[in-house]
Image (cartoon, rainbow, N blue to C red; front, side):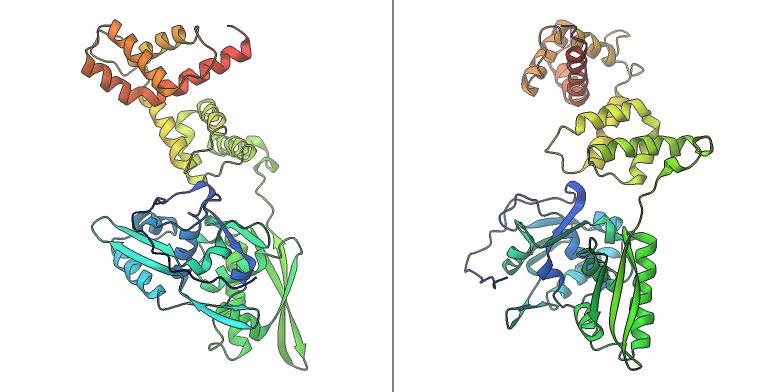
Length: 403
C-alpha cells in the first residue's frame, strides 16, 4: 500500500456526527493497519476500536464522532462516576502514543486522532481520526479484516486484543506463524519480557485463556526452536462452535431459554445483531409480538441501533394497550386506533407516507370530538404504534387478499 499524504484541508468542527451506536458495531480495518506496531493500554485499544465501529460503510471521509462516556464505559463493563476523568485523561494520552507502520522501506509515525474535545458538562468526548488513516479505515475493498466491537469489549488484556486481530485475518487458513521478536514488536512489548518464559506466561497464556472464554476464535500454539531456544510461535486457530441450544432436550429448557432460542433464530435469519441481555428483557412482551417487530425491522435500512429501536417499539406497543383510557368516556386510545386502522386500510393497500397517515388520524380524532391540543398530544404519543399497526394490517390484507 502506498503512503497516504496529508493535505492542508481545514477540519470543520461542526461536521455531521455519529452518536454512540451504529449497526452491528462493526469494525473494518485494513490488514496493513492490523500488522502495524503500537503500544497502548487496554482501554486505549478499546476506545480506538469503539470509534472505528462508528464509521459507516458509505463514509468517504472521517467525521467528528461523539462518544458518550457513560455508554462507552457500560459497553466495556465499567461502572462508577470516576470513569469520566479516567476517559478524559486516556483520550489525551492517546495523542502521545502514535502508531508505527512500515510502508515500502519507510517507517511512518502517525497520531491516532487529529482532534479530541472533552465536553465535561455533557459527559461526551468528540474525536476525529487523523487523515493518515483514511486508506486503512474507509472504503476498503480488499485485504481487510472485520469483527464487531462486542468481540473485544470484555477482554482485559491489550495483548489479547492485538493477538485476536492478528489471528482473525487468518481464521480461514487456521494457522499463523511469527518470529518471537516480530510478534513482540507488533504487540508493542519489545522492551518487556526479555525472557521467553515471561512472555509466554504474561502474554500468550493470558490471551489463550481470554479468547477461549470470551471470543469467537481461540488458539493453541506450538513453539519452534533453534537448538534449545524458542524463536518462533505457530498459532493454531480454532473457531468456537456456535451455541446450539437445540442440542438439549426441550423439556429441560426453561421458558426463558426457549424464548431466547426462538428469538435468536429470527434475529440470525435476518442478520440483526442484538445482545443476549436485551433479548431476555423482551420476554415480557411475548414471543409473537417480538417476532412481528423483528420482521418489520428486517426491511429497514436506516436503523442505527437495533437493540434500542426494537425495545422502544415494543414499549410503545405495550404502553398503548386497551387498559389505558383517555378522557372521552371509556374509549381507549387502543380502541380508537383499531377503529381508525380498520377503516383506513379498506381504502388502500399501500403503506402511506407518515404525513398522510398523521393527517388522516388527526381528522378522525377531530370527528370523535377531540380538541386540537388533545389531538396533537394523542398523535405525538401514539403515532409510532399507529404507524406500525397500520403497516401490519396492510400486510395482512395483502397476504389474505381481503381487499
